[in-house]
Length: 364
Image 1 (tube, helix red, strand yellow):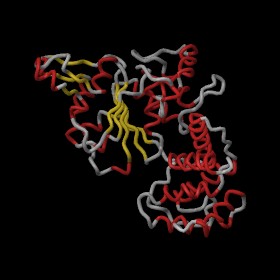
Image 2 (cartoon, rainbow, N blue to C red; image 1 turned 90 degrees about the vertical axis):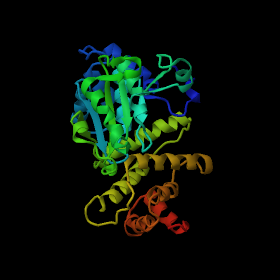
Image 3 (spheres, rainbow, N blue to C red; image 1 turned 30 degrees about the vertical axis):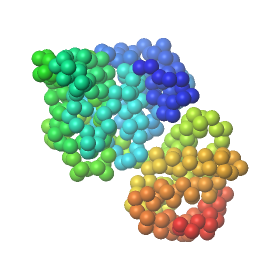
Image 4 (spheres, one colour; image 1 turned 180 degrees about the vertical axis):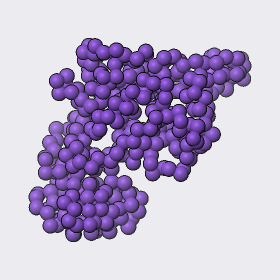
């Protein structure tokens, strides 16, 4: 797939952004590959988890065994379902797995209440359909059908947001590895290398529960919320620096800034301080790692464009307000209480700046 010049792209696909790493891995890779794969499962694992020796940056920081199970699933005849809380890198992992295995992460169906069966299978160019009837030229393949034809990975985001009848359109595809096109009198069979990675948000359970028949076609891999402070700091640091690099901003992120932000998110998420000595109220919103990255990146932009170039506690707090109160305005009271009972007692520049900014923000 052709792409415009990189500086003009806001969100560069993984296969383009990581092209040099993928080429390096292909040259290094000496292991057996499943039919249709561009890399061996071992090389895919290195791409996802990183390697200092090969200069491969980690794309996912977490349990190695979960990543291995996900990769092995995609080499089997079962599809992969990544489940977890919002912000646990389901889509991020799905994108990078697809890029490493088949060279493209762009065959995507976004699951919504409005997703139709046509978007799973195929539709028609109705002008051509009226003019010349059902024909190959009038057929508009879905990303899933395209992946089947080319032996690639299709991605289905937020599968539980799709209506049940749309979900069930996947059953025959995953069972038979084929799509019937009766209008053309033929059946499209998947080439080797084809599979599907779906994602599901655990907070959406009950929206459109998957049928037992469909569940049996997937291998479930749950991605947990990060509970290790240093791991979360590493994720926040790496992803924020990547985003700043894409923006061409030379900002540095201090260790105390990262530790303070990660601590705030972990304590509000767990409902207690990290030492277990004090209970705190939890906001109703999800305090995810992805949200923490957004807060830090936004704070860095404020510091660069409107400040002195150094991210301060007040920059973080101004973004935290939007993150915490996006679902329930009363959650601002939870944040204010946390600042008064926890943050104000802490030592350190960033903690002090957050506590001082509390008085300046009328919204709290």
